[in-house]
Amino acid sequence: MLSIIITAFKEPKSIGKAIESIINQNIQEKYELIISAPDKETLKIAEEYSKKNKNIRVFKDPGKGKVFAINKILPRLKGEIILLTDGDVFISENSVQDLIKPFENKGVGAVTGRVMSINPRNNMLGYWSHLLCEAAHRMRLNRFKKNQFLECSGYLWAFRNNFLKEIPRDTAEDTIVPLLFYLKGYKISYIPYAEVYVKFPQTFRDFINQKIRTAKAHETLSRYVSIKDFPRMKSIKNEIFESHYLFLFPKNIREIFWTLLLFPVRLYIWFAVFFKRYIKKEYKVDNWKRIDSTK
Image (cartoon, rainbow, N blue to C red):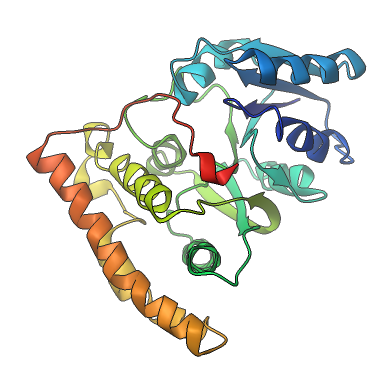
């Protein structure tokens, strides 16, 4: 059996599309779909779907954060495989079946799909979203082909049930879970044709805050694994040495200029993470924080 979780926070306008992108697929496995949200507006929409589809269950999130909600749901799941996605994204046709197929190999512990931006490419932030999605795709694909560790994307990923009792709340869940599988000898798979469509920040401030929050979540991984055993995928070193191909991504002079502008911005983000982590002693906190320009 397959357990699918959609976590959402104040997503009444997008939760329906997220649900339909799953239930309209030809899922060959028996499955349960759990919609988790703390707010009444999103839960109301989810409950309407649950009345029409017996596979759907609604869970009222206590509102203490995404990982907190997932940990509350984990003991209630019936599936051997857990697939997670968000209420403000939607997934491609057949992506559920594509994502769970690698688990036929008992040596696979976690699987992730490919993130695709739905932002227009004709402005700087939209272009950056496409560029960074392409960079993440290439890094994952390269590591997958070499049978190396790769981080999953929290927008669309899956892992074997009954491996963890709970997920640590103070770090990146889509990194620590596959990492723990990897260190136990499991493979992490990447399925690039299982796509998840995401709207990224449309203001510079939201862009910076989202990237800092994501990067900061990786700074506490050493609490759970030895640094020498931690094959980091997201780091300033990797961005420097694995970003050369990004210069082939622009299609015109304007996009070349935007590409060049991204490098000092990324450097600022890593400096901000260093300052918050080592000077201000700030760490990742599991809570819901809405980024309005992604809605």
